[in-house]
Figure 1 (cartoon, rainbow, N blue to C red):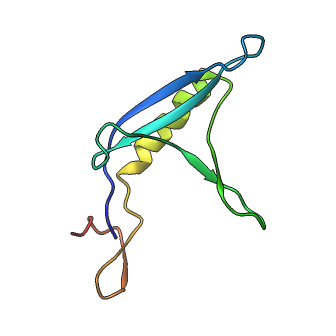
Figure 2: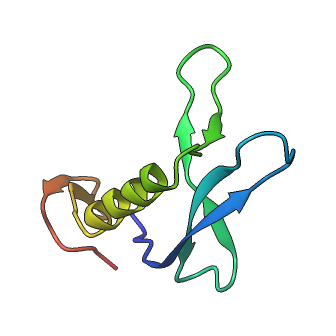
Length: 94
């Protein structure tokens, strides 16, 4: 398993139509991708599969979401080594 280290977070305010409220899109930047920003995605359950971007209508909700992601990013739930065996709460491997 390859570890991905997030180095930065931001919230993009997007307004496509001035008559409607803007949406706030939380994004993160991975160490390996340099300047490329990624939008958080939520999996769609069902027959079609796929994923949708995570967005919020309230800025405080978007900030809370980012805070949650920051708290979870360093938590290792399990790690699969090269032998395919699973262990819990081990540091990231090579």
